[in-house]
Amino acid sequence: MKYAWIERHKSCWPVIRQCEALNVSSSGYFGHQRRRIADDPAIPGKRLSDAALLVHIKAVHAASKGEYGWPRIWQELRANNVRVWKERVRRLMKIHGIKARGKRKFVVTTDSKHNLPIAPNLLNRNFQPDAPNRVWASDITYIQTDTGWLYLAVVLDLYSRQIVGWSMQPHMQSSLVTDALKMAWFRRRPEPGLIFHSDRGSQYCSHAFQNILAEYGMHCSMSRKGNCWDNAPVESLWGSLKVGRLYGMRFETRRQAMDEVIDWLNYYNYRRLHSTLNYISPMKFEQNWLVAQLGKIA
Image (cartoon, rainbow, N blue to C red):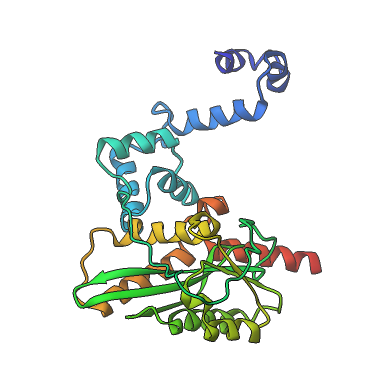
């Protein structure tokens, strides 16, 4: 193996020169060395035992309430300075049956059979704006309880994937989405011109909702008919909530479901590692952006 050759001869020739001669990257070699040292049992104090590592893995898995699979657990361990190779985390989790909650299909709640005006698709799947408060996306989902359905509407800032507004009610009337929009606006106070994207549901097409969008100076954008991929970030959010947190839970009352959802909303914004954000939380991602902007001003 080329890395082994370099290791044996590094006292004779510089590592970088050997990498060039063998046509391998120096960063790859040094990364290999770091992983070897971290997992080498012959180096005292460097390698965690499987039992100790399993404790860390179970702690992260429990903190996510079963939502994390091995990639996010490995990233969380790295963020907490637990030096371990990802394949070891994956192997231990497989051996001990630790995994993310299973997938499940859910019923579509969109009611697009109406005669209300439909807005064009201004977003056109451009899910990566260059700053906060440029594009928001919204959708409705449902949660079953023993006393009836609980409906949840959220407003998602597509830059940081942060949930900036939400509303939960026992119905799907237009107030469900207008309340979520009002919360988002009062929390963020965006400049006029923001694009607000949703599906073609009657709640978003309603005169009440459209009047508030106009009052806030927002541009309405709607997905194409029957195309859930046009609102993919919010669809992914529902997967994280329902599969990662709510799957298998039973709620006797709507209040119990609301408490669980509120706990998850806070967890999602402040702690959940987001793969689209290079495995940091939405709140941290936006804080990093703000620090960068302050640095430019200084």
